[in-house]
Structure formats: C-alpha cells, structure tokens
Length: 59
Image (cartoon, rainbow, N blue to C red; front, side, top):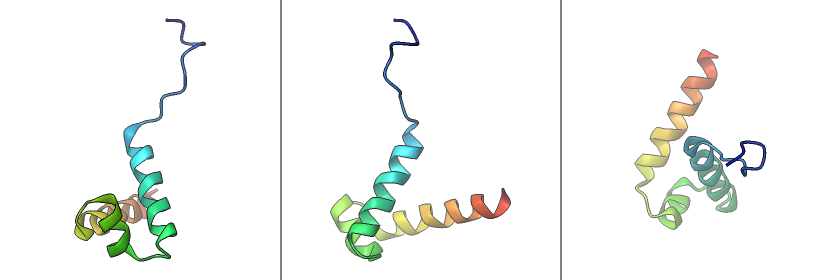
C-alpha cells in the first residue's frame, strides 16, 4: 500500500486521551460518572489525568 493513500492512523494513546477528555466534558467534569460510562474504574481515569499533568509540567 502506498503511504500517501493510507488513511491517517492515530496513536492509541491520543485516541484514549481524546475519548477520556470528551467523556469527562460530556459529564460536566464528573470523573466518576465518565468512568462509569467508559466502563473503567474512576481510579484509572484519575491516574491517567495525573500522568498527563506530570508530562505537561515536565515539558
């Protein structure tokens, strides 16, 4: 397949972050509710958010 004709493939970590952030926004910032809709533990979302914040601070 020609790389110029392939659809753009987004890295999984970007897709995951976008979906999580969108879910939290749709739940008006309620992380616990967003976690319920995403079928994950709230601690999973809190851990990911903390990791993103640490990464942003170190950049």
